[in-house]
Length: 440
Image (cartoon, rainbow, N blue to C red; front, side):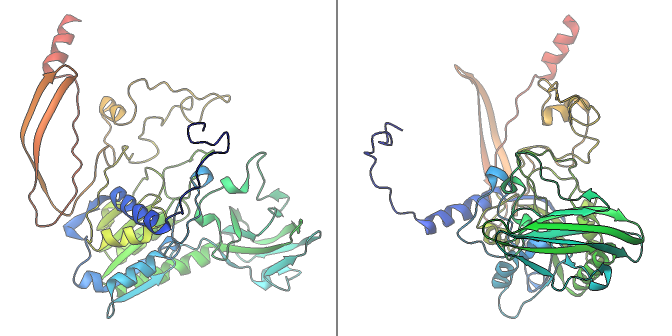
C-alpha cells in the first residue's frame, strides 16, 4: 500500500476503467476454460442441419449463469442470454426454439388452493409496516411441492403446518446464498423449499416486513404436475428439432458443502427424457465442480462450461458452433457417483463427526486416490476433447541439475485449428517398485 501511495494519499489518479477490454479478456478466459467431456459421432461442432434447427432447453439456456454465490458472486456490466447468442449465431433462416424444462421460479399458487384467497399474487408491503397471512393450503392429491418465495427485502417467514420453511442461519447473509438462479428475472431474491405434502388442508402462515424501504413478496409453487408439463413441452420440442442444446446447472456457494454431486432438482429426469426423445442432445453444464452423470450414455455431447462469467453466452456459442476449439482440461477427476470418490463411506472425512472433519488421505488426494484404490472415475484428471487431433513425437527425457527435463514435439494432425494441453506425469518406474518390494 505504501509503494502505491495509498497510505499518504499520494496515489496517482486511477486510469479510466476499460469495460470493453475487460469483456474481451472475459471472453477469452471462458473459451479457454470450456471443457468438452463427450462428443459422440462428431455431434459438435454444430454444422449443417444441426446448426439450423435447434431446440434449446433449460432455465439457464434463457438466463445467463455468470457466477456462484458468496465471494464468487460478481454482478456483470452485462450478460447476454445463451438463447439469444445461439439464435444470433445460427442466423436468419435457422429455427431455434426454447423450452423451460425445469421451472426455477415457480408458478402462481391457484386461488382455489388458498383459503382465504390472496387478492393479488404480488404483495406490496409499505415501509415500516408488516403484512401477514393466515389460512390453509389445500392439496388435491399427495404430491411433491416446491414452495418458492420471491422478495425484495428481509426474508419473509413462512410456516407450513408449523414448520419454518425458510429459516435464516445466524450470520449467513442473503448475499452468500447462491448465484444467479437465486434471483428472479425482475431482481427479487428467491428461496425454495421442497417437501412431500399429503392430500388435504395444511395450515399456512406468512409474515413479511416492509423494513425501512418497503418490499414486494410473492408466493409460488412447483408440483409434480407442473414439472411433468414442463418436461413434456421440452420433449415435444426436442422431437421436432434436428439437434438439442440442453443447459443444466448447479448453484453453489462458499460456506456450504454440497450434499451430493448429482444435479439439483429434477434435471436428471429432464435430461433422460429429452435425450431419449432426441439422441442428438448436447448437455451444457454450468456447474461449480464435478457432477455425476447417470444420463451420460444417452447424450451425444457434454460441454462443461463451469461458471463462465459475463461472456459465458458468447463463449458457449463459439464452442458449440466450432468458432473456437474447447481449450479446457479437467483440473480434477469426476466421480461416477456419491459412493465412488475419496471421501465416500467415511463420515470422519465427510461430513465430519462431532464437528471435526479429518483430512486423512495423505498423498492419495485427487487422481492419486483413484489410482491407489483401483476406482475408475467418470472422467479422469486432465480429460478434455478437441475438434482436431494431435500427435506426440520425439519424446526425450534427460536429467539436469533441477531434475528431469522432458521434451517432445506436438503436431496438429487434423484439419482444424485446435488447442492442446500437454501433460506429463512422473512416478516410480516398474523396476523401482520391484526393487523396493524385493528389499522389503
